Image (cartoon, rainbow, N blue to C red; front, side, top):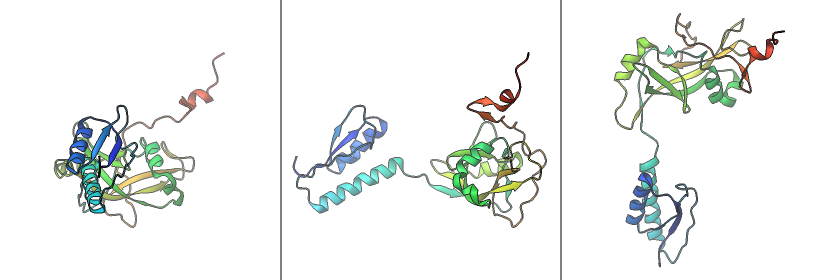
Length: 221
């Protein structure tokens, strides 16, 4: 097979078939390896391919991959006045997890918040592929109506900022810090959290899956 490139490790399926069609159009010879994951491994056998033909084939291959697995179009939804995202105490573990090392500075962290329809009229807020809150009900309807259709996703610029309490509350860490999500233009001073914004119960802290209350409670005699 002079002038061919053999790609090993392609699993045939809905996506695999599309890639095979793209590869065939680019003049590639694709060997199918059952049980291998798509793009797990590539082995090239260069058998006299010209630089121009190889460049064209590689471009066609990459174009097909981007079309199939490329990043979705992100449409920014402008918000004139920002708002606190609901349920930060109940989802604090998720928020802290996605913050990672960014929380060490103790300052607001810029965030591109993705909005996705949830159950019923709920509008879910996703950051770094993790659900970190919900749009307040009084805001959800207007934003839901502006969500793009098709494969595009709606995003709102905002930030994740620390809220410090003198006395630790439910969801706070031992220093009284609670990380909250703010959607919209970041103000110099964050307004007070509206009463009743957070309604979900805060999960009990656990160690290896065992609630702390069980660990600290002595067994009955």
